[in-house]
Amino acid sequence: MRDISTLSKIGFGTYRVSRKDPEHTEAIRLALSLGGNLIDTANSYQNGESERLIGSIIQEFDPNSIFIISKAGYVDNGFMPKMSTAALQKTIPISAAYSHCIHPDFLEQKLEESLKRIKRSYIDCYMLHNPEYQLSNGQNSLTDNQASLYSDIQQAFIFLEEQVKIGKIRYYGISSNGFPLAPDNPQAVSLTEIIKIAQRISPNHHFKMIQFPFNLFENNASEQLFFEGKSLIDLAKSEGIITVGNRPFNANIENSTIRLANNNVQVHEDEMKIGEKIADEIFSTIESEMLRLNWEKKIADIPFLPFLHENWFNINHTQGIDHIFSQQLTPFVNQLYADRIPDDLNRQIEAFRLICEKSALSKMDQIASTIKKQLEEREVVHSSDKRPLQVILCEKYLEAGIDHVLVGMRRTDYVRDLQPFFSS
Image 1: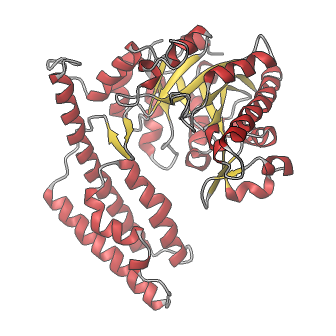
Image 2: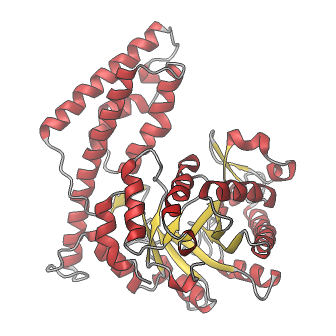
Image 3: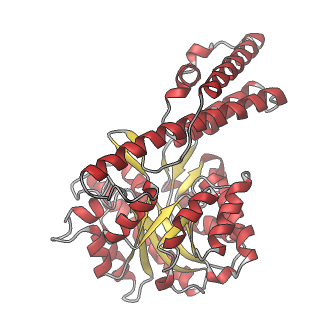
């Protein structure tokens, strides 16, 4: 088994990775062959496809030499009929499609799923995934919700300690956007309280890892001394807890996302014209089908459709493209055609998605180049440093004290750029 003190400084994040894209497979395989040994996933990523991909690839190496983090907490609402009554009573709705739960019954179900997908008898670190959703129970006051959250975490930790004893996990932790927040923030998750919970359960507890957003702009974890004169990172280190940063290149600022990475992608004028032509054809086809079926609603009545048609070239982030295609357009077209989408329309939608993604990558590259120039002007980085911005930033994050940084290295060139950080 991989010793927890020998993990790669840069881990492979698989939030948007699945078996459907051959390059994702090649990227993970290359990372492992070049010495990477830390992979992060979750039961909910790509509806389990990320875990399945990991399970297939690690068999080509020594599976026990690879440290795998997985997480549970998100509930696909279609899964609810399989949940126990006790777990359902502790489930918080998030959207029409998803809810959230960290009840031990639910965790046990999801752990078993993950083990089957990963094709290994144990997971190195199993994390509660964004438990702060439990604070959004509108039926209770914030104080009651906070008390309930820490009570639920304690019950989850008791379960996870039991799983350590029987060998299904080695360590456990929490991945939360709430860790770096100021203590008076209603969405804050207190590491101090969670450490107390772990210590109450056992002086030899296996709560060993936390994960949270950490990037150039979201840097409270190292810059703010919220914990009796200590930063979040300092507090974790003093307690022997490993810190893992996610979203290293996706900074959320004032309800928008800034991408902090060079992609070396340019979209040409003729490609944009092709995109406009395909978009017109797709939406004309959709409108015709809606008329043929006598749908009560028109395209204008479905907000994301006119938005995508009229603004696709203004979307400056690939996650936005991914969301609108996978979560909105594809489900809508499937519904419109009763899951029998014509092949020509499928091909058009895929071609349109690729142009949209390339346009977004080009805009992201422009933003990253501007940010790099600003950093050079502030002498945060040297103008002579020609490495990609993402490589420079990973170095800065590690210098700031975080133990590991998770990067979604979905392309092989990304893997090669970051290879110097694979060694522990």
